[in-house]
Amino acid sequence: MTARIVVTGLGVVAPNGLGTDDHWKATLATRSGVRTIARFDASGYPVRVAGEVGEFTPAEHVPGRLVPQTDRTTQFALAAAQWAVEDAGVDLAALGPYDAGVITASGCGGFEFGQRELQKLWSEGPQRVSAYQSFAWFYAVNTGQLSIRHGARGAGSVVVSEQAGGLDALASARRRLRGGDLTVVLGGGLDAPLSPWGLTAQIPVGLLSTRQDPDRAFLPFDADASGYVPGEGGAVLVVEELEAARRRGAPVVYGELAGYAATFDPRPGSGRPPALARAIVGALDDAGLRPADVDVVFADASGVPAQDAAEAAALREVFGPRGVPVAVPKTMTGRLYAGGAPLDVAGALLSIRDSVVPAAANVRDVPEAYDLDVVVDGPRELPVRAALVVARGHGGFNSALVVRAV
Image 1 (tube, helix red, strand yellow):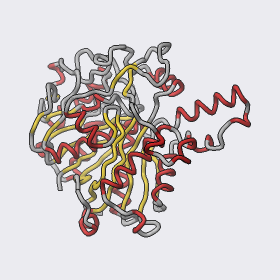
Image 2: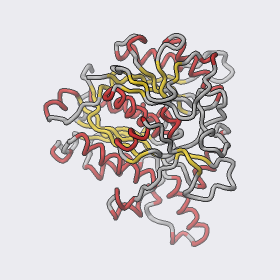
Image 3: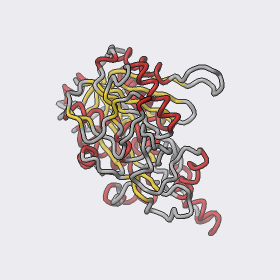
Image 4: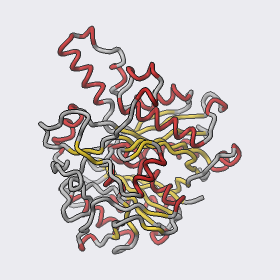
């Protein structure tokens, strides 16, 4: 169980860019995709701002026969996976029939597809409901569709742990590859919760920002934080064992999935502390690193003041006051649920490649009590050899993943 597991391909669908290059250029330019919702009339909702993927035409990225069979989240997944496979230069068809697998995360399932078919049921009768409703809404549909599309008949699964799910899915891929079950895994997560039904399901949690100015709606680690904005998109990564990638001549090795740990917060009111710091320490221990070895943290950064304070406390506990640069690129996308952490992993790997840490958008007033070195006012150039990605899922999930240069 000591094989080094690496990422050789990236595929990104994000509110501020389609494809890895466009997203990364926008991120380094601090160009945000958080905007007033345009895909439907949200004027009657308290939440009117989101990280919306623009200019995504399904027919340009998805085989025509699949367009009417799939929800927007699966269309994103199909596009991202294709880009990741092309980036990795891997011929999945040349592998054994059970050597490739798919492990994805989902926090929402196919909200928009489900809403459309329920509207048909109500207004037109059961005979008008699509047969594809039987699976297009389901959390595991992305895993299934990617498996079919790429002939990946090996082990597959789906993880449902909200924002933490994407890290959990990549960790599962790492375990499968180390165990010898698979040769290549398509891993990651995507969500598309921006539809009337999807937005309605999120609002009762009470954590979303209701500000209507896109520049002031999502301000994690800022004194003016008021909650988070939802977003859509995410990333799919090609993951494989390092020596196998070298043998096949992989065009690029972005970095290693070096360490991972997950915890669950104690019951509210128990008097026990949150468990995020323990997850971070566990990931560092798994990677064989000390806190001083970490060059940047890609934070969970919820934008909910109490949650930001708790994360700041965990980072101080592990790294010390202002002990490590903290990156918050999700200020330009919103929280993407299962897609958020894989997108941060892609960002962390690109930071390693380019020796640069992206700046947060619109964050200007980090409270002194947080004692965090949040990267603001432009990207920060520095050597990045190891990065920590932190994600927390609603309900108490904590996950931490260390990526490092090979």
